[in-house]
Picture 1: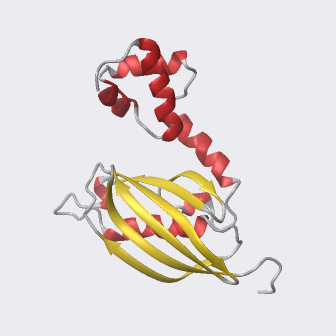
Picture 2: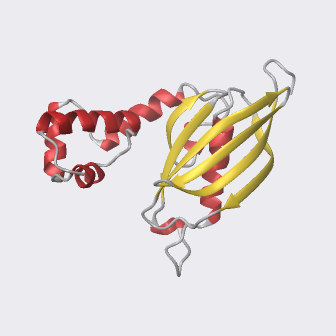
Length: 189
């Protein structure tokens, strides 16, 4: 990207962080062809908090929406949720999430991120995975940021069908179709 003027750059920072509040200063600096210090100064002038504070604010807001699972049980960071419609989260692959001899993420982390998102998106108190049909399309590597997007396709009594697609940048790495079982409110356990 060509270097933008200061005001244009600041508008672009606001736009990008509105789209994805979890962008790092380093990513913004690389994308906008400026130094990390310039991004930090711009954020300061714009009153945009650092990444850690943005993550905490989004998590706190999203925790209020979730009925089915404690926020700390969601694998990854919940980015947004519209109960019974859609949700998204991100998960950064660290060395401890990979195979010992390779820098490739172990599949159960991708599955876990998608499955916990499928549970969280439903506005029911007790949600269990009844069935899952998953495909691993491409390996995720250490350092990759996996963004998972859950879409509720259908809700019937006691059951919901949810599609979860996971991406690294613009490439799909995982797809899961989940059939989730739930109890309706007020039912006797």
